[in-house]
Image (cartoon, rainbow, N blue to C red; front, side, top):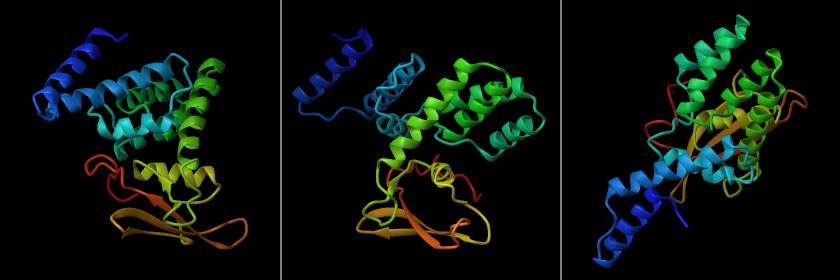
Length: 219
């Protein structure tokens, strides 16, 4: 069984293949948007059996999703947080999540804001989203070699992952560079572990980066 809109798309696709034609770019774009929308709706309804890697990849392909916030957006969010204007924080965060549900740091900000607003239900929801999104990255590899690189869809997922590992992503003991090898693209990080003083190397596979929305400026 399928919804009418889904059945219509499938019928169009079947006709295209029957005529020996590839589906048009417009049909492909509609499918990408529909996939992303359905996955988000499932999570919003409390279904955490969703494959969060698939959700993140659907975001990159969809015209409905921005995987990271702009500097201006983050400035407004951080400003409201510093002012302890938590109603404003969740208002801004809600707008950003509607633009890109997979934005880990915005969900993490919601956890703190809703805790201050004494809303444990929303605290748990956003914490569960953060956990599921981060797990989908950490389960993609261990980051120690290019072959086992963490798979990410935007630069800020790299920052979120390093933060989750207890490591800095800026400062005098941190450097990063872009690497291409065997047709794949990586960000290579060298980080001095503040706990041990040891220099660590991590690789992030950036093959899924969108050229227009996955890396914004230098931060």
